[in-house]
Length: 402
Image (cartoon, rainbow, N blue to C red; front, side):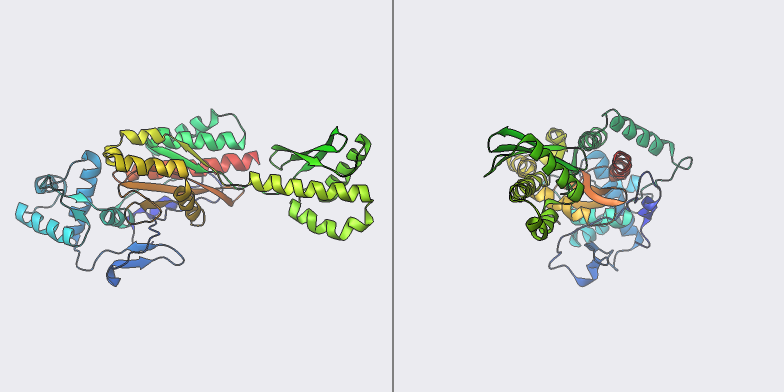
């Protein structure tokens, strides 16, 4: 990351294991010149600034993207002359724009003489040109970022306790502050149990009650070959909890293989039935889920809703969630904030869509990912801190609750 202006984002600690801002482009850039490629160790492919691209070209590209993000209109030479701070003639600016277009960083809409950024242009912008203010601990934190942190804390605190409610609150917070869609991938649950109970329903039907380490309760009905008295069920539950509490049911199965001979026939039969029912229950409960908030806000974004085809693909993302889960899973294995830009990543199905993500954790262990889904034309310097701070605060809240 040396030489990138935005490395200041690595500062601060609002929660355990503060993430680092690492822009990402996990897609193969097939056919691109070798000089245009870069790769972090064990990381994604990144675009390097071409050697033929001078400071003047970089300044004009940065200005063009900033103006397009702010105004949403193709940017012409007059606007670039006004906002770039460069003393260049319109003809010189047009020549530079032509070069940038040839390199694939900008494009000319058919209806305008101005230019707009391409996904490749956005990628170069977020990797090498975007300046993000550092997240420093108070009192060094800027007033705006301090206010943002307080706002996020307030919104999350309004949702009283409970890990699932904290996660839902984080998704709402991301959407409310970014004005786009907020997403949180819920953590995979540990497949261990804290305790079990057996309750007699009828002669050979028993209710297995499983309590997870988080306090969640699951029930499963077991059909048994033998009939059990309430006293026998209490004895079985006590044995189970004394010897196996804190283990997964798969681990219990392994232990029971060596202990079944020491158990009475009635107890061993019940234990085996409980293990199979418990394993099934925990496996069903361990499917990954995504909490999404504010997807309808994207209907108000013209870049994403200007055609029925875009709308269909947009809502396919939220309905089927496969590509979204895949993207969030990729993010959970990376360090810090990542930026995925559509059109260059197979994980983002729309060319005009961008996803900003960050992992969150419990007690320093990454357990999930959260982020914002919006248009490529978004104010990255604002949305990135929203995602970063929310991930830190959710990590802190979940760690305190664990």
